[in-house]
Amino acid sequence: MRLILILGDQLSPQIAALAEAEAGRDVVVMAEVMDEASYVPHHPKKIAFLFAAMRKFAARLRDQGWTVAYTELEDPENTQSIPGELLRRADALGATEVIATEPGEWRLISALEDCPLPVHQMPDTRFLASHAEFDAWAEGRKQLRMEYFYREMRRKTGYLMEGGKPEGGKWNYDHDNRKPAPEDVAFEGPLRFAPDAVTEEVLALVADRFGENFGELTPFWFATDAEQAQQALDHFIRHALPKFGDYQDAMLSENRFLYHAVIAQYINTGLLDWRAACDAAEAAYRDGTAPLNAVEGFIRQIIGWREYMRGIYFREGPDYTQRNALGHDRPLPAFYWDADTDMHCVSQAVGQTRDEAYAHHIQRLMVTGNFALLAGIDPAAVHEWYLAVYADAYEWVEAPNVIGMSQFADGGVLGSKPYVSSGAYIDRMSNYCKSCAYKVKQKTGEGACPFNLLYWQFLIRHRAKFEGNPRMAQMYRTFDRMDETRRETVLAEAEDLLARLDRGERI
Ligand SMILES: Cc1cc2nc3c(=O)[nH]c(=O)nc-3n(C[C@H](O)[C@H](O)[C@H](O)COP(=O)(O)OP(=O)(O)OC[C@H]3O[C@@H](n4cnc5c(N)ncnc54)[C@H](O)[C@@H]3O)c2cc1C
Ligand code: SF4
Image 1 (cartoon, rainbow, N blue to C red):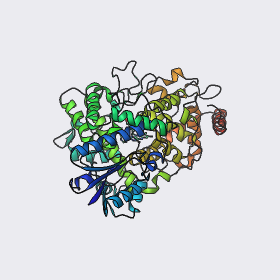
Image 2: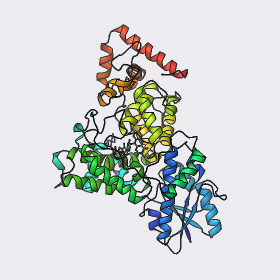
Image 3: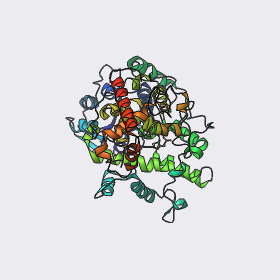
Image 4: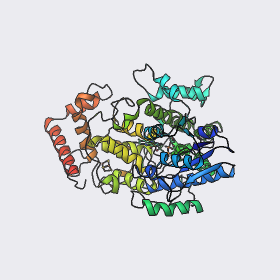
């Protein structure tokens, strides 16, 4: 008899460990443990979502004839760690080996390797590209650019392909996907689900045990099983996908979701298969209900960016989260935890993160990520924050997005230049600046937008590293063309701002 380990983000009926198991013989082990629930201070909504989805998945397996040894967080015998629960169950049931599916985090992979029981970690087959396939693609390339990997994945899946050529003649329609924020958004946001009895019980537990963590537990509206996740996808495809491309990069004070899908938490835990999402998007294009720029953009995020991020995480190895190529060491400012800042863009992004355990890509990249990079925040602290606060955050996808894409802490493995911008970008893509205490057009002096000051200070701080980068040369030329007094004022005011940040003053 063997134990079949199913982790909280492995809630797929086709998960590899289960495919190896025999229902009448083996026992499925699932466990809510403090080690996993507290190694970063996860958002209460994220913990509740996972525990509710795990409990419902276990019930479904039982209905299908599986024996499931499920440990609830408050069970008195709970050892509060995954290896501890495997040992306890093996002892009680007389099992001598464990079949697991490879976790999406090096920390847990090595915990399973170090477990005194033999644990066979099967490859996670829920992804389009295996580790070997990604490594073969990456081998010998000077730069690992997502765009080329994505084209391979288009060929492999056949999505939006016509006789070996990309639909419409181009691989990528991103230039159509940068429209500024619209006045009104017709989409009412993601489908919301009233908590059922299982979820209510979990909500009470999470309120009691994790109520102090950053984040609002209620209203809780996430899907917690595969049927609901499918309904959330259908709702997006029908009502939001047609405009997804156009407003993909836009941000609005009054609207937290715009035309985004809000399904990453479902895909990453296995409630929703990425193929279902891409198939439905392609079908909408073929039916004429969604335009090519939207559908290509959506499919690229999933078979391109998502798979590429995973490839990078596993290729780069366990030290990836410790990288700090720019030597940044400032602590994470308190306003990442309380939204208490005069920077309206940051307070909106952090505020909605607190309420929803969600912010969309551009808020993560160009607001909270951009600020952290410009201000020289320790990337490990930034990484822990992102891992904690988003319902979709699992290290294999979060770390490359944060350490690589957002903080350039991997020194350029993932991006060819850092994603930094002054306030002008935020102003172009959002309506945040209209409600801000700072003035986005003001470059120096009283009320100057902090992003404007820090932008130049960042470039000058790292001049030796970036001046030779052809994609950044223009920025340095612009700075050098400013008159000397202006340059000195910008840098002195930026230093002053950073000193105030270090003293914990309100920014
Ligand atoms: C700093 C930073 C941290 C991030 N952390 C995470 C994370 O922890 N988990 C996570 O799943 N995504 C992360 N992302 C990527 C992206 O922001 C989220 O996938 C997206 O916001 C999820 O919301 P959505 O479902 O509404 O996505 P949509 O905008 O509707 O996109 C559709 C789907 O595409 C996929 N996708 C889009 N962009 C990416 C990307 N860059 N990497 C991987 N998949 C992508 C997701 O599965 C998403 O559900 C991060 C991005 C940044 C810049
Ligand atoms: S003015 Fe600057 S700080 Fe204020 S919302 Fe705009 S970009 Fe953000």
